[in-house]
Image 1 (cartoon, helix red, strand yellow):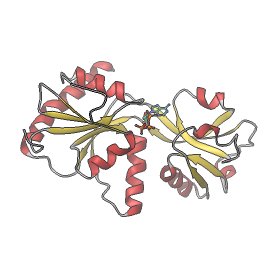
Image 2 (cartoon, helix red, strand yellow; image 1 turned 180 degrees about the horizontal axis):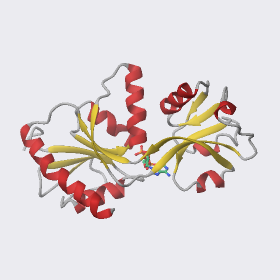
Image 3 (cartoon, helix red, strand yellow; image 1 turned 120 degrees about the horizontal axis):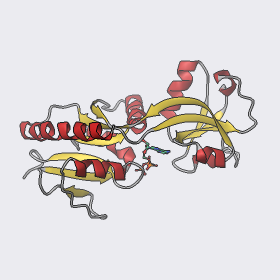
Length: 225
Ligand code: ATP
């Protein structure tokens, strides 16, 4: 079958969303032939291919129409959309449905002992983050100026080593913050995983596959509630 007739779905290759995503697809009845080294995994019982990539690549692949669908965290989605808008690149997509996993929040955290007296206390400070666009939007909305230092990992050590005054990072339980002597002071974005779809209309065969798949996804989500 050609790429015009097989629905292509992007998912995280490995990380916090990959197990839940794979489990969801399996519970929808998809038989996946996943091999660690392969970028494209074929579904053997439906005309669907799964592209396994870094989380941060998923929104762009869907926005550019390389993949028809993607399963990604709202945080990554929103950050990418803001960044692409800033760069003048295509940033449209359809949020087909929210999913009930990948729950986390993007929060600002400061070293213990920091005298936090509301958002204005953060004015002029420097934050380590992987999400500069979301942080900038928050600062703009609150009428404060912030600087940022872009880090893709180990964000929570930045204040201790003098790279930043505080951090803006994803939190779920708060245990990592506590272990690093940080206190959450502002939640700036709440995130869950979403199924997204390219903004361009799908070909008729692909739309038909999605019309079969989507009720199954919604059924699995409902059963988990
Ligand atoms: P990749 O390694 O694929 O480039 P990543 O660095 O964002 O992506 P993960 O740390 O696996 O990889 O996180 C994937 C997604 O899981 C996050 O973008 C977020 O939507 C979700 N998530 C849920 N809870 C957390 C958490 N406590 N910390 C980080 N991410 C979380």
